[in-house]
Image: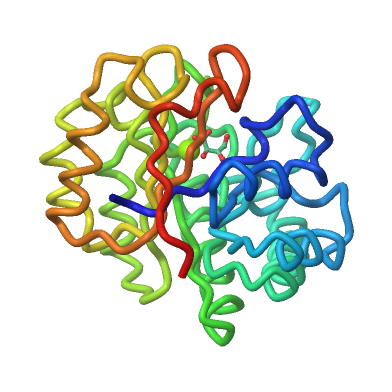
Length: 258
Ligand SMILES: O=C(O)[C@H](O)C(=O)CO
Ligand SMILES: [Mg+2]
């Protein structure tokens, strides 16, 4: 059974963000992920992780002005300097929390734009060069346009091509099964083909983005497939609980604490 990371942005919303760490540990998680830690000091996050025996699986670089609708900076040529600052800021948090994976969000730009594509590649080169000395992987994640209209990276083949083209050892795919099913389907064959370049996996039911096992996919079968493929990474639980977080954990098989 894969090692699950509770997504503290989407789950445990019944508690304040900093209290979610203890609740996730109490519920049996040994790892967490979230979108953005930046409202809190790195030491605060590190303290919660330490106190609750949790590993930080992943978080995102600063996305620009999220409230204003921005969804990342990497593919925006006019924001290159801000992107570089966001890399430095995310690395401060990664070093404090011992996170080994950072998700770089591309932003809203035409997927076929040569200018956006060039900016994106340059941004990824910069982020990977800054992260590599710390043993940190940079992840890119195709997102479906129903959830994120206008998002630059909206295709798993495009992501795999960019990873191959750049050839950076610490540039990897964030394989979100929810987006894969919406964008392409063919989830099992996609996992088989892309696992060699995959640095992190996420799960949510399709189409409602709720608990595993409640949508159109046989999520338990996919977890068994990950075991058969010897996937040793995390599976981030990036879903919105249908009712209460704890009430919705019947699917969750607790991994032994390491
Ligand atoms: O939405 C997703 O699936 C991504 O994982 C993300 O972090 C941006 O929302
Ligand atoms: Mg995701």
